[in-house]
Structure formats: structure tokens, C-alpha cells
Image (cartoon, rainbow, N blue to C red; front, top):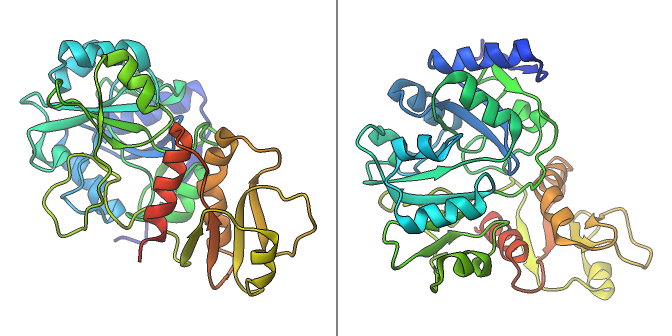
Length: 333
């Protein structure tokens, strides 16, 4: 990888947006914000540009890319939308939902890892949508970080991880949700499956489709065949620091944890704590916890702790499932 590249952060001025869109249209890479996490974008129909994504991230060819579109009409050029897919699109697009669908012939094999299906999403972030419109092309965009590491939710996170591998980062502030999109498998619309939990709940999806959705959150190792969607590897979203998970970390347990190990709680405790104790929210609330999860994991990973002892989210809500899915994969040995 060349060390001559130095990433520049761009403010979202009209002139910068036009310039970055031209970079994309010419086959270049641009890291940009979505409402979930920052993505490393390229023209989804340009094989060379998509290869550059895999090279910059160190991403295996078996892990497909999500194609981002601005309209349902554009989605139809990428995927074959069944009546069920159109129902879901009407209910949840633009938003944090990806659908895996039969692909159209023009989608390059590198985008789909050679599969006959493609992952497609219409993001809600106005800056990313504007890049799609200005560039005139659908954008393939996995998370903008070295493969397997904690996903980036700010432009500075992208620069820290890929600053010597890419040149252009659009700074749109912190991602609002902070956790990647829900992924719904609709290759067979009569047997839908949840491949990755996110902010869109299983219950909401089932309500729109009017049928049961099976949960297919099995974990896959890197040497298995091509994945139907990203984010399904057993070990993923991982800091360098080892993570241990617990259902509930009590005050007694905190006092037993060595001072050189970090403790990550969901909610700020009401009792005095040591300086190795951190939390995601002060008053509770899973949206705030999800928003800060990846940023906090990065902070703790840079703190030279011997281990991170993390508390999982209670319940079976959409965000609880999403947070725990990310923590589970991040803690995989």
C-alpha cells in the first residue's frame, strides 16, 4: 500500500460536493457519512473502482458490498424488486435497511462476491444521497475502515484507519445511528430472513411483509464461501484489545476487575467508580448507547487497557439485538 497518499477532510460545501462527485464518477474513492456509519464509496458499476475498495480496506473478495441508491428507479437497475421488496422499500427507505435481492446483469461480480444476489440500500443521509445524485452512479460502500476493525462513525475515525490509503474524506459530522443497517434477505420473498440486526426491528419488518421472518444470524468464518451479506463473520467490528462480555456488571464485580482493565457499562452508575469505568449513556436509552458504541470501543482500544469488560444490552429490542450482535462479534477470539 502506498504511503504517499494523505487523506484530506472536506467540508460539505457545494463546490466540494461537486468535486468529490467528480472523483467518484472518474472511478476514485471517497469516504462519506451515512446515518449508520461512514462508508468508503465508489461507483458500483466500475470494476476497477470497486477493486480499489477491497484493496484499501484489505477486505476479502468473499465479503460482498452494499450498493447505495438514491431512488427506487435506480434500485431497479441494480436489483430485481419483487412486490414484497417494494413494500419494504416504501415503508423503510430512505433509511437504515439493506435488502438482499436477485441482482441485475449489469452489476459486477466483484460487488456481489460472484453471487447472483446483491445487497442494496437507500440511505437517509442527505450528503451521501447528494453524492449519488451528483456523481450519476449508484455507490458501493462498505464501512470506511480497515477490514474487521471497529466501524467509523466520524471523519476522524476514517482518517485514523485509512488516512494513508485513501485521499478524500467528506466530513459530515458523527453518524446519527452509529450501527450498521439491518439486512433483510428477500432473495426468496416467501421465506424472508434477517441476516444482520440494526435499527429497523424484526417486528416492524414482519408487520409490513405480513409473514414470519426467520433469524439467520449464524456466524461465518473467513474461509467459508462467499457471504450473502456483509457483517456476518464470526470475528468482526473488533478492537485490538480483547473483550469479555457480561449480562450485568455489578459494583461488586467492578471492584474485582484489575485496574489495568477497562469496564464498559451501558448506563452511568449511581455509585462512585474508579477511572477504569466508562459508560455509553448517563440516563439510559439504547439509541444513545448505539450512537456511541463504536466511538467508545475505539477510545478504549487506544487507552492501552489489557482487556475491555463490556456489559451487553438487556432485552430483545432492535437496538439491543444490534448492540449485542456487534459486541459478540467484536469479542470473538
